[in-house]
Image 1 (cartoon, rainbow, N blue to C red):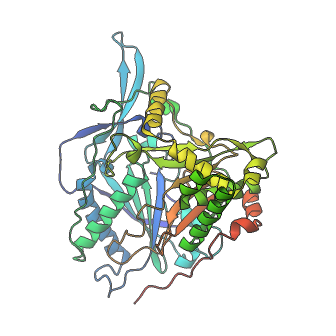
Image 2: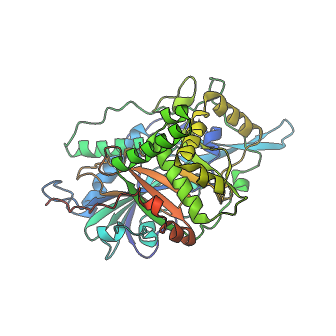
Image 3: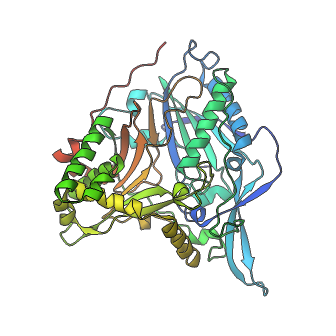
Length: 476
C-alpha cells in the first residue's frame, strides 16, 4: 500500500474486520458506481484537539486512541459490511467464448479495512489551519493514505483506510474511502455511525439507532439490479492515471449573515430585471455558486469569445420517482451544468442572473433527465477522469449538509475538516458546513497559482468572505 510522505512516520498498521461473521455477498455496480472507477478515493479528514484525561479517561495516549477507534470501527462494519469488502471483476462472453465486456461488483467477504497510526513530528494544529492563508497542501496531504489510488484499485486495496495522525497538540483522522463504493452522503452517514458507536463504547451515549443502510442497488426498471457491462475485457483498460496539476487551495468561510446578504443581492437584481420567478426560487446555495462562478471567471481573464458554465454535483435520491431512501448506500450523484455563456456576458448579466442560471440547472434535473442519462451511459459506458474537467468551467461539489462536525468519537467535536490531494482540479470548489453551524458554509477552493493570485485582488469577491475566527484551545 502506498505510504504517506516523509512528513509523517507510520508506526503501526492493523487490519480491522467486522466483529460478527456473515454470509458472503455480491453487490453489483450500477452506472453511477462504475463511472467513478478512474477517479481518486475520497480523501476527507477531521482535525481534533488532543483528548484530555478529564474529558476522555483512557484515551490519554494515541495508542489507546487507535485501539478505541479500531474496536468501534469493527462494530460499525457489522452494519456497513460492504466497506470491509473488495471489488471483483467478471468477464461476460457470448456462446462462442468471445468476450463481450466485463462487470464489477463488491465482494463482501469481510476482507477488512486498514487503520494506520502515524506521527507528524513538529506539526501543530496551527500549522494545519493557518488563518487567512492557503491550505498547506504538503502538510495536510501527508495525513492521508492511498494518495495516488483510483477507485478501481479497490480490487487489491482496502475500500476504506484510516490514518490516525498524532500531532504535537492534536489528532488528525485522515480517511481514504472508495468513491465507487458510495457517494459522500453515504460516506458521512457511515462515519457518523462509527463515531456514535465509539461514544457508546465509552458509555457517553446509547448505541446508535439510525435507520440501517440500504445496500440493494437501484435499477431503472424497478426490478433487481443486474451488473452493468463495461465495453472492455478488464476495467483497467478504461483507467487513466493523470498527474495532478500545480494548484493553490484556500478555505473560505461564509457566515450565515454573509450568505443571506448574497441571496438578497441576487433577489434584488432579479426583481429589477423582471424575473420574479427566479427571485422567488433563489437559495443561498445558488447565490454562493454565482459568487464563485463569476469570481473564478474574472480571475481567469478568459478571452471574449470563450464560453463558461457552472457545474454542481447533485444528489439523485430525492429526485427519482419513486424516491430512493436517504439511507441508500451507493453512488447516486450527477453533475448538472448551467447553459453556456460567454465570459464577458456572464460578468455583465450580474450576480442575480448567474444565481438563477444555477437554479434552472438544478430544477431541470428531474426523474426523466436522470433516467435519460442512465440510458445514454448504458449505451456508451465511460468513466470520469481529469480530462472531463472543463478548464473554463467552475465545478461545485461536496455539500454543506454533510454532518462533519457531528463526528464526535468520544473526546469532542472536530476543530476543522480538510481534504487530501485527490480529485482536485483548477476551478473546483468543495462545500463544507461551517463549524459554528447556523447555516454557515466553508468553501474549499482550488485554482492554479496564477488564477488564485488574481482572485485575491478581487474586491467584490472578498467582500462576501467572512474573516477566519480563531480556534480556541481545548478545555483541560
